[in-house]
Length: 470
Ligand SMILES: Nc1ncnc2c1ncn2[C@@H]1O[C@H](COP(=O)(O)OP(=O)(O)O)[C@@H](O)[C@H]1O
Ligand SMILES: N[C@@H](CC(=O)OP(=O)(O)O)C(=O)O
Image (cartoon, rainbow, N blue to C red):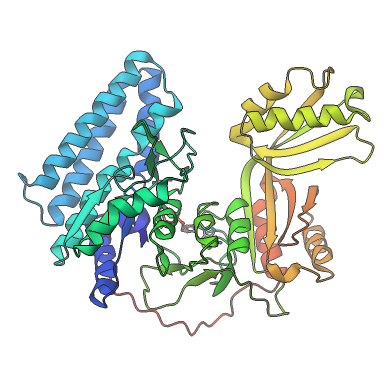
């Protein structure tokens, strides 16, 4: 079971999350709990690291003091005495954090490795709180860092991936605890290299931690508890009429996450695919509602080829052109090799058939790296590179699109009727998604328009029972 930042937000939320875990334990289910940092803490830690790098140690220390108050208050509210082991552990963790941040301040250098060390403190601090919440409900819990739980990773700091040896190590580390009737509580988002350096799995990575652990243990199911009903037809913060999707395939979820649906980490389902372990995305506020079940099956009803609309904001189009590129395949090969070396995520690619122009859509945060990668000559020629910023990618996703005619026509006419210009178009041959690049300013309007054009708005009256057991 994975609990995200909102479900770890304060003592009341942690107590409720612990109750959800215990509810299953009492039914005889062996539960492993994986937790995120308290809501907002990861961003705060990133801010602390950046303040130290810029030389503002006073601001960094103020923020660390704020973290101390927040975690001590939660521990106290969960019943910890001031001289208890948990309070001592939180104090020691915050002291180590302070030292790491001071190191960044002295060096005025924030490497990806030191950033990972600093941001992983959020989960290291929240795991003892969840163990406390479980103990207060009568469970025997034992908390571990990602590394202690056996999540050994490569050294791609900021977006580390588990090594093939992780599964065996996770089993070794957790089976004994489970056999002894303890509930392991694992700090999500983080792992460790073979040499013991702390890594993180990318933003939203606790979902991924949970599925890595679930797959390693051959779990019957992995449950991700959220502050939404499940995976929905659009981000409910943007689209009022977004509705829960009862069933999705691994492939559909991956497309949704890749194209910006923040509800799951883009790689979260990958560890589950081989063994076909189901993932349930469930609402902590409404635990008896089924939420979304993710399996290898894609269900299509014939009426809704498109199941969801999603968008990535803050992307840039990089236009590579010039006489140098005309008719020279080597240039294009060099160009992609250069981007691969820099680990650039390509959201969309389009090449004009005359081969005189290649357009790439990348995350705004990758722009600097991309431009640097494209500066040296490609295939012996210098290229002209132009950037268009402030773009968004909107994607429609659904296995029912495969072989269904008229889906792209509906998408384009909905956008045209809403007076929205399309800058680029892409449809994968899997026909699981169609994506378009549009002006960033149009993205909210476009999402709502497309959601409604594909009949995804919820009926005005819902018969879903609402039972908030918190
Ligand atoms: N298609 C979608 N379905 C559900 N939630 C979505 C979707 N797209 C974006 N979201 C956002 O994802 C959030 C839940 O993800 P996240 O905050 O990472 O959860 P947690 O921290 O609880 O794991 C929701 O609050 C919602 O605004
Ligand atoms: N705390 C990390 C990892 C994570 O998964 O968080 P959440 O479950 O709150 O999205 C982050 O903010 O990226």
